[in-house]
Image (cartoon, rainbow, N blue to C red; front, side):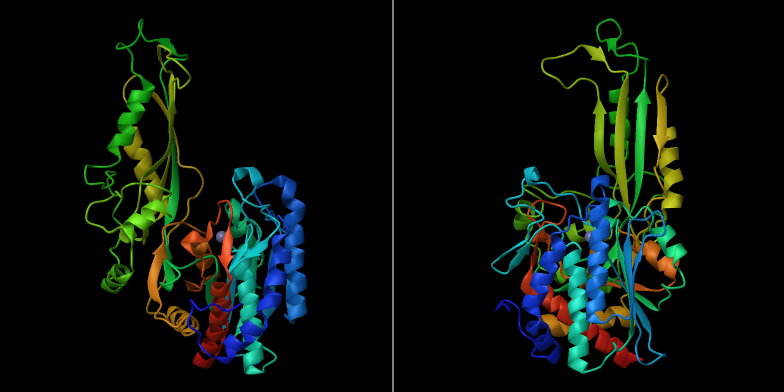
Length: 471
Ligand SMILES: [Zn+2]
């Protein structure tokens, strides 16, 4: 199960991981057969079954405290606790999720998504990488840590929180964290739901963007009007909404909403230098990850990584209005709809950004148009890790040993519940995961690269040892 592509560390932890590799693949494959799709009410029973599977596995491993939490509106989550022998050892909480994105053969899968298969060095199936593969990786890492140290408990107190509805937006995570605040007390948080820039480019995620929604509906007349009898004499909601869309950016790609950038800080010199040192093959990235896009674009003066990781966005997700059927239909449409999402960075607070967006729209509604504006739920705050923290340094060291290379700081452009975790639990957070851009998470034919998952497990084993040695 080892690959010649990854340098081998030769550590005891690596030997212990390798000894368990075949059992690990069999075990993870069994879990992947449970279609724990949180978005689909028809799969509620499977989400519960997936939680029970995980608890049974943790019990077999010897975790002293294992619980399914189904006492809130949240879908079943799993909690586990393995205290260190030393009562003064720090407590590290590992977060991940056991629910998966929907998957159907007709979406374009080349095999049944919940009948996992090993092809070469890949394990293929929904959840293989995101995030069951990574939770299984943590379990394997803890086993290897215990075997390598000969101890009966980990070097730091470990807690696991494995959510059951991350893929449908973690709608009840705040409630779950609140209901179980006592059990979840911890000194540090490690999030597994993350990855690296590339297989040959070991990186650790050190930040995620936040997000707010914006939906605008423009209405003119009460029904579509004849474009000959009325066109040119009444406002056209589609034209007017297109004007609004165009106003969000200037010609350099800067977002034109007053005050929008007030809480945006530039990345540190160390981060910019690290990102500049990451290999980036733009044509390959466009053709592969960007699915055949033919050019990059965005805010002037920033690289692609910087645009994705350190700069906020105003993205149109949908702009609809009028007739799009065959032939033509001579109307002035009576309504048009705009959906946008704004990715936020650094200290941009969704609660502060929303009124700025609402004002920007309100100031532009022309006479004769009735506008309905909404900014959805509370939004997601961005999260930036402290690169100078012991936790980030220990993760970089642990992954560096396992992967045999320096691990550079990177970020992800997406958004997750990380800021919610740090706020609710009052602890710093960092990431450890080995997902690759090519893992096709959320897409057909999801896969995990097994040798890399094993290196990830070895990283977990080193991390627990390093964090224990620190105290
Ligand atoms: Zn995930």
